[in-house]
Amino acid sequence: MRHVAVDVETTGLDPNSGDRVISIGCVELVKRQFTGRDFHRLIDPQRSIPAESSRVHGISDDQVAGQPKFAELAEEFLDFVRGAHLLGHNVEFDLGFLDAELQKARRKERLGEICDSTCTLKMARARYPTQRNNLDALTLRLGVASSERGYHDALEDARLTASVWLRMTMGQGELSMSEEAGGGAKRAIEREGLELVRFEPGAEDLEAHEKMLRNIDAKSERGAAWLKEFGET
Image 1 (cartoon, rainbow, N blue to C red):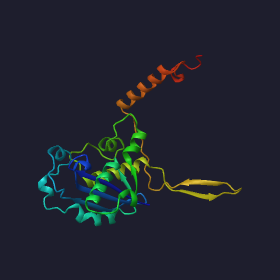
Image 2: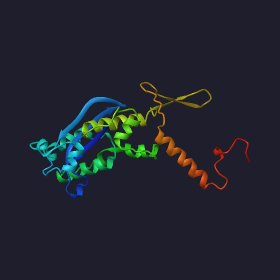
Image 3: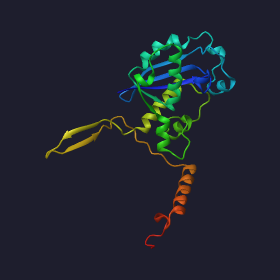
Image 4: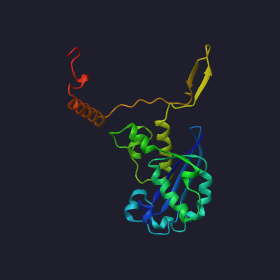
């Protein structure tokens, strides 16, 4: 299967209020392997970039001056992502901005119609409900990055998104079915290339866990069994 991790940098948070895409980063994976193909472009948003947005991604008006407009890159971008399964950290944000740009460029395509997608932020929230799950925190937790970064970069964020998706789906290889004697079947998980990682909880994780156990104990009529001495009735 072909996946493409995608990330955008923008002038603000709301495409319906006139905010525009100023950078797109895409990274391709085939059969869970990075292929080395990517798509990375700066874009002239045809409006000024607010200072508070520049503090996030470090992109200034001078850097996008003279860059192509989105409409000039739309065909190349669509060719890169068409038919792929898209990955994004808060993917609805990225696809919402890109669909708004496609509409402004008078393109009929919408990414939800030509691509499936997976949100790694939703995956992380389901797996780590009591922890911070922004991309920086998640990459540190999963060992993808060794330290917090400075400015956000669309291509780098796309690579990190792909990497955390690989870590969170580790072990979900293709299942092969083979008939056994007696009509049964066995399932084998393809483990080639997998790297097993052990994560130790930090002090914040342990404190949150203990708090959850105390809350469960307080709400139980007879108290939580695991907090009693063995053999107590």
